[in-house]
Image (cartoon, rainbow, N blue to C red; front, side, top):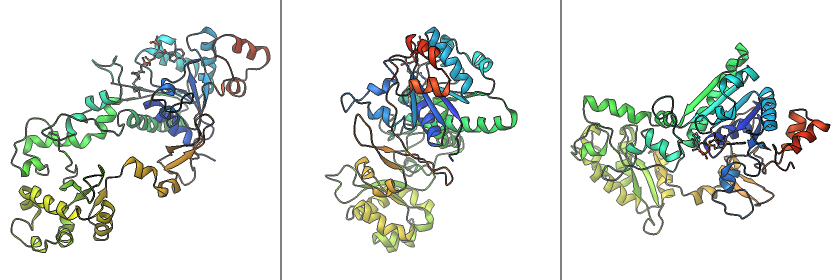
Length: 419
Ligand SMILES: CC(C)(COP(=O)(O)OP(=O)(O)OC[C@H]1O[C@@H](n2cnc3c(N)ncnc32)[C@H](O)[C@@H]1OP(=O)(O)O)[C@@H](O)C(=O)NCCC(=O)NCCS
């Protein structure tokens, strides 16, 4: 049995944020029915295509374990089928532009009337307020949520990060809201509306930077490298390069081979508890007791000198050797892993974090499996559906259409060329 066995999800999502959420629900065992526009489908099916004629990796990697029904929600018969789906499902998830669902005739009020037990979950770029009507994509959310202004180096422009904290980050937040609402429904019998705005989710993930914003009022942020360098702080949380957010001095340092390999680097943290071990490892035992070096506070204005010295040592070792040497001493280091190295890590396949998936049109590809492991509800990753692959199956087995009724729907133009 899977944790969400028996839960039916009407998946009205597209692109990345919503599909991330419904993919997780599918991995936890929900029956996720992806509703797609006939003949077109989720736009990502045709974005960044690498194998002509096959769904893109963008689509396949975000839509595992789902079923696909083609349905024109603006066609009268399409509306009838959608209404039946709302009656049957426990959860409706959508991430259309603001107002799109209302324009289809399916406002929250109408949806509740159709099925008072349904949980309706929405992702929008912004919450209520002056930007509520904006369409939003990943990088816009990273900028509006405070991440970009606090990422990068002080003397460079704001930076977005490759981790999709706006899209996938919001999908994760929404997923938690949905299972929480399902839990509450167990007691109340009622559905509810769940919303997650991308700006809010990014801000939640950037919460330590808002912490620092408030700390600025009482003095400089001493753990930021710029403090030790004597550079005054401005009014807003600055960009901190690769400083660690937790208050322990940390940097990214070159390792052996950095001249050729753009990822021959390691993260290196020198927290107080292991300072003496660091001194021994890099061959500076005198620094353990030397004035200006022995105490964490006294080291703050010497971090460049200290990290330069540590880097001289790390440059003599590979990033993996640095890890092998430092780990037994509890010195926190981390190799900068390339996506190539990650894709080749058999240990990640053994845990199901990476999976090899067979696909009829593109052959085998690699994907990220479910990163959340439940001991009683293991996830098996199955391939994403072809467009409309399950239209007929869903109409008959989920909605009970048969005979002339089924023929009427199939001929109505509402469900495309049903497979
Ligand atoms: C992502 C986003 C910017 C894409 O915008 P878009 O490509 O213009 O797509 P929209 O959501 O506006 O939908 C376009 C139209 O398709 C229609 N449509 C979608 N599925 C349909 C279906 N099955 N049948 C008929 N019409 C359909 C919508 O009703 C809408 O029509 P309308 O503009 O007449 O109301 C926008 O959906 C958005 O801001 N979403 C919320 C935030 C978000 O999730 N962003 C991140 C995405 S990773």
